[in-house]
Image (cartoon, rainbow, N blue to C red):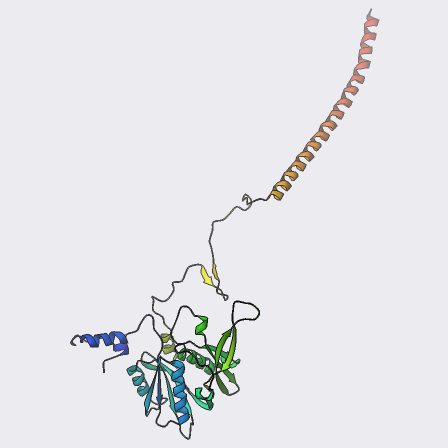
Length: 350
């Protein structure tokens, strides 16, 4: 088989150039900037009961057309050796898988998992109980092919338990479908409710029918109808990626990463908040827009101030005038006896 993954498209110094068909295959196996829908591989273990076979069929119906069901049984011990599942996922070009098995120690066993760079990333083993297939809900409407599900996670354990946190991420990635830029209300035709209560996880599927809102609002009113499949799960064994592998799986190519804008950030409400740097402003001399009322008030204040100044100046002038008149009268009184003395002296001399 042609090399895939990290060695895809790489040739040694002495190797010949591959043929056109092989070159196209190698190019298709290289990492893509915009990945499409994640296909799922559904396969059976060494032993598989009829119930678990129906579970795989229902999962294929929910994930169609991005699902591939293998009919042959496979001797796979996932938690001891993952090479077999990695080889099958690479061969069938599937990044997620579901392995169903049944034995005395672990009855009705189902393993959800995914791969990264053709290596096992994480896997969760659950026990299936109280299973109700799609055929159990006869006459109930079914989802459209290729429609994306809505998810509702009920219970505070999804935020407190680390195992359930990773299991939630795995479920969302398993059912995420084809990435799209916009959604139509008509395409939202089913919702999956996953409830974590005590030691069990309850998986329920509902068909969504949009009806006209009786209150007159434009937004329609959803009506839920149980459509299946439904089952209860008990978590058994788990395998999660190492911190380094998990970090590398979250890395985005440079062309998709947004450049950090300086002095700009996004708050919890999704609003963009920016910081602007300006020179020091003289607020005292700054003049803004003034309304008519403010202009009239300022004119009245200036007029009152001017009248007060004029009144004060008048009072000062009047006080100064009174003081000058009193001084002149005193001088006249002093000069009168002097004149009389002069007259008397003149008479005496004669």
